[in-house]
Image (tube, rainbow, N blue to C red; front, side, top):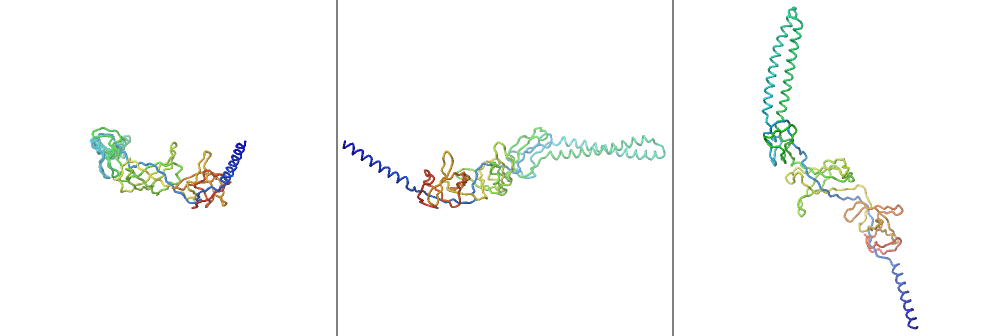
Length: 362
């Protein structure tokens, strides 16, 4: 009995000591590290892929139906004004000769009808020629004039076709693909070759439409290509923003001009990695991203009041830059201000009103 009584007393004493120690521990101030809320415009960047195009790339098509005599080879560099395509002009030259003879014939007829009309008009004054004769010759005279005009128009049409039979380079570039070879008969508007402007390149990229207000003409876009261990880096300048959104991807097309001297460094159709800077003009509240506490019900941070008690503040998170991240309080009764102390270490298990021991402040 005495042993049992002693055991009970010792157990009660141990339980009392444990309770006292737990109470002291639960009320002890927990150590936390803090940083202050700051305010500044935040700039971030968006990494996208872009494709390089020649600014004046064009598919050369046939200007008339006929037989091809010459088509430039793929890979051939051609200066502006040099011949890309030449077509057989013999049928046109024969048609031109025929029309020239028709014009000559019409002029002979006009001369004859003009003389005949003049003679009949003189006879009509003395009633030696009937009026119907004069009218008939007058009609023949007018028809000869019309034949001359039609022949001259036809000669102009033939001259236009002859000029289209030879296609010259609209700019200095390279033939990237040939669709038809010499000797083939082609119809008008047939694709003959692809001609690329390698000396005047532009990058075409697609940016989510939500970033449209960041895209301005003249903004420099850094880009790189090649081996990741030793990439080639350069800069392009935004030359146009096309505010037409693709309904599926919700992106807008942006075109950026490369420097003129980079023609031999890059190829048309090449993919490059572009960095689009996203600079906000409006100042926002910024905190260290380590202060964010993510829970199933949402994201919150822990604010340290002047009396070193804590307050949980639900927030929404915006853009980030380095260790800083944009935040905005979502509870109107719990707001944040510049200079407020925010726990960045040791805040995971803190509850509202709990006292803390501030270890550091930046």
